[in-house]
Amino acid sequence: MKAKDCFELAAEQARKATCKRARCGSVIITDDTHEVIGVGHNGPPLGDESQRTCEAEWDLGIKPKYDKTCCIHAEWRAIFDVLKTNADKISRATLWFMRVDENGEWTDAGEPFCTVCSRLALESGLANFALWVDGKPKIYTTADYNKASYAYYKKA
Ligand SMILES: [Zn+2]
Ligand SMILES: [Zn+2]
Image 1 (cartoon, rainbow, N blue to C red):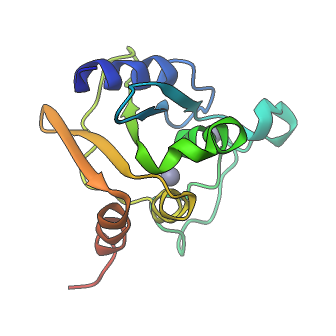
Image 2: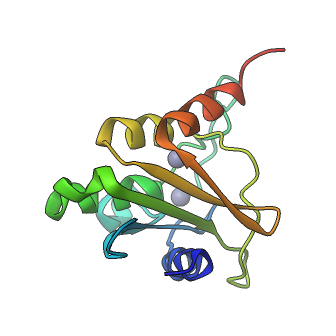
């Protein structure tokens, strides 16, 4: 399976996102057998509209960039999905992430910054985390991804 095909599967998930602030998708695919073992998109917890907080206004003065206080991240969903049914395969799998724009087109991921996703990925035992950066795949080990996410906030 080519990297671009993996990112397109993540983009398909992102187009299903119901969060009003970000359209993100994730798929987790085994590195050896290329099996899709987990999927997720951004949305309220369990899709419960009564828990939707996208449109509320928050005092974000002390909040970091990753937490706009709304929705379940696509990455969390994909990781939970794997842990429910294919937990034994997560240590030889890669999470492919994509955020799409309002037209459903791929966007550049830039630097990692979500330290919740990065810690959860590490704790789950997931092997790798793949972002689309500068028109090509950038694949991190989850250990490096976590360090990169924290480095984003480290004061110079
Ligand atoms: Zn939201
Ligand atoms: Zn996140």
